[in-house]
Length: 604
Image (cartoon, rainbow, N blue to C red; front, top):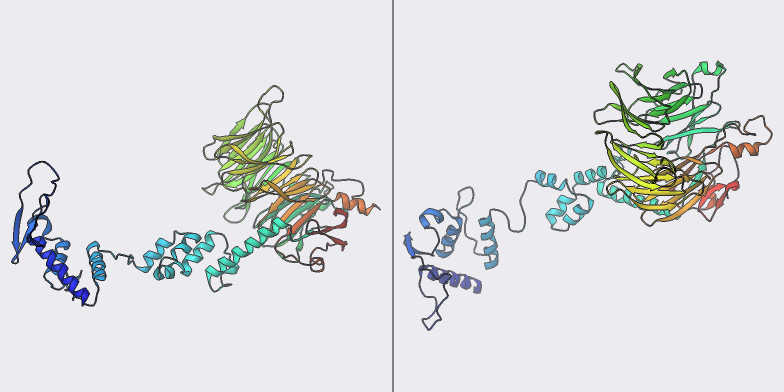
């Protein structure tokens, strides 16, 4: 009753004020200040429906501007105690006498602004489309706004998209969980555990051995599948994603066994569908991983092969022999053809092959001091050439090429540098570094955006930011020089000529742990749960490497090793780790409690 009386009094005072009647008993009042010194505008009154209205100075007449205003209709409904303004459908709305003054005011504001006061009423599909652009943290914040937003922010379609965006979704996990939000939460928990295992050196290590009399020549990895070539000409394949490290071998071309030439493997490359091996006699074998063990294609070069490249995305192979670079790929019918060939002025040292945005293979080759950009049906283009400045390393991403250039010697005041070129424009983007040693290795394609990591002969590993052309961090790593390097968003793994593998925390600038082997580290690959390193000896035919020699210990020292570090296992006792780490030779494996990994006794 008190609220109803307040509303009646409010209407009475409002009606009296608009009509010009005094709302308080007459008495002495102070004169009001005028807004301007000029003469006030004349006030005019209008009368409609028997109610006189007082128009303020400077306001438009009721007939022109305010006649159709919804504000005026609201005032009329309040003053005359009539039904509320009509709805959008044209039907009159009944007056709700149960509302309080505050609720009535909020309802009036909602009708005036044509949108709800505390929420925006949208179709569910449109609201879902808007929330589709939010990430994981933003969805969590929106879920705390209201119950309606909570229901919308926890929609399974949104969290399915978040799982895809953050890379936690594969085909095998589509039906593994009942809620995509819970699936993402579990995957992030596993990722946190893996990072802790990396930092604390918790896991197991195993070695991919092969029979006696074989020395490791080259290693390459694609998504955890390891391809290795040996001096005997044999090709071996391991799948490190399985618990038993399944091993298989690939058969070589039959006529190679009777040619009388050297069968030693020079290079091996692998992608998701193909495996390629190049031999010392200039022959190339190509296998399809889905078909079988026999080669599906074979071709021959007249001279030794200096470089081999395989496109990661497509079935395109590039080889460099003598002063010729040749590209091979299958046609629409599946028959392998030579799509193009190029001539170089000098022998090729480095060769990389990628696929551009148009789906065309692009090769980047370094021959002494000249860097070539090669495309099919287009004449070869020279990206960089400075006489006497030899290219010491090369790596290529989808749109950039980075290579280290040796300085001219004591004639030049500038040190060795890294040049980064754009593959679209062919122009130099930036030049990095000023080191006294040669840049022995570069990793650009696997590094985070705008970053690259390099290894140098001056024993240091450096991370560069291409946006500011500065070094973000530098580690004193290997006393004989850096031979291999790779990084992700928080760690750097480097290998040295002395056989040492080091793991660094990029943000803290500290070394996490290290492992030592006998031969130089020539290859490094890792993902969130596995680290693969290859220690390849420089001498391919040492004494004791033959199976006919009596000193088998010498063979184990000189054969080279492929080490697989698994950080997905939890910290367990030595008895549980021991079966995983046994090699094919049934060697005795010891556990090094200083580093938290299982290693052979001769490495402890």
